[in-house]
Image (tube, rainbow, N blue to C red; front, side, top):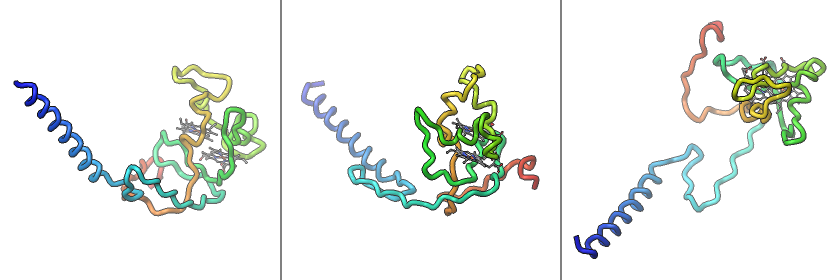
Length: 150
Ligand code: HEC
Ligand code: HEC
């Protein structure tokens, strides 16, 4: 193969990849609507968090329970964790809150620690407050009868 043919093939291959990528990009449509990659994304509408209510039934056994109260302004950082001021073993009785379960004291090798494990420190990584909104996609998930009682 001569040098110029080889060069031409490499250039064609490159063009092909660029074309393929742009057609893939057009097929991918986000639920937030289509945005070009170099546009600033629109700020999502701010939803109103639900106010305090009774605990929300879990849909499956391993589910992190949903947060049944407003969490606006609840800070979690290196020095302070607002959630633990009510949910820690030291404070839950006085706050009338559920205490964090024992799984929250285990490190990833299942060693039991004296305090909340670092992997369970950022509560809102798993537990989320609720807003009244339309679901983004249809979902027909049914909880186990043992949980729903139906
Ligand atoms: C001012 C006290 C307070 C603070 C702060 C607080 N909670 Fe709560 N939380 C409660 C109370 C009270 C309940 C309801 C307990 C009940 O009715 O059984 C509750 C319920 C919950 C539940 C439901 C438990 C279950 O079994 O269904 C979760 C999850 C939860 N809170 C997570 C959090 C997280 C995460 C934070 C921090 C972002 C937080 N809470 C901050 C008081 C608090
Ligand atoms: C990595 C995910 C994860 C993180 C982070 C996490 N949790 Fe949980 N949490 C769970 C799961 C899963 C359950 C249900 C099963 C269990 O008890 O482990 C749960 C259960 C709970 C319960 C109910 C306990 C019970 O006995 O019914 C409370 C209250 C709670 N978490 C609060 C918190 C608080 C407060 C934090 C932050 C300090 C936190 N969680 C961090 C996953 C998480």
